[in-house]
Image (cartoon, rainbow, N blue to C red; front, side, top):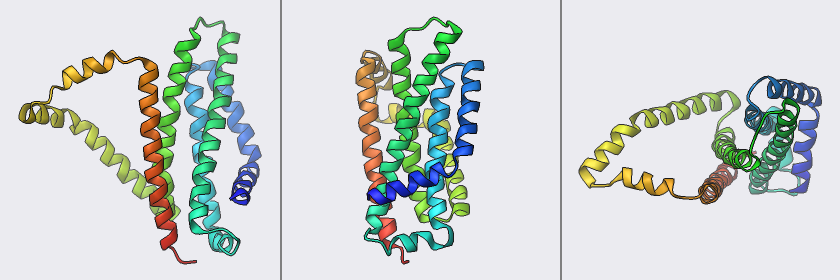
Length: 221
């Protein structure tokens, strides 16, 4: 497991020129745009780099070679999730550091607690997106996975567009008062909301990991 994580770190470090470019671009954007943008930008780049390690492993049957080592398909899948959590969290921490530097240099008035709460709301989103992308990458080739992800995004957008009609149908036919539920949700403290969001994130990651392990175990190398 440790060896797999070191391997992925070396793959990322092999792209250090690209990392430096991303870093300077993000700093420039952080000073020219809303400082909160950088907290989304850094994890997004980290997510892309994490997913790219799967494509790198698949090149010229690299995963088949890895399976000759004292690791199992399940270990390989779990290692990707551990690496993604470490990578996203590290990028998020660096982004927050750059964000506050930007705020101080620009002398922008801010409330630390408000910014920190907003930042904590961003990270789970990337964990969930990554949890969707990893099993898709395991199941399909790089080219096919792009098509599958495009279809998934389309389905999610359609569900969101149809959400209002569905809620109205449920409220009318089943007597569910969503307005009262929304009013109760507004009374919850931000910390409670964040705790629920992270708990949901853990559930999604766990389900995704189980799916990925099953996908990898069914593959033949």
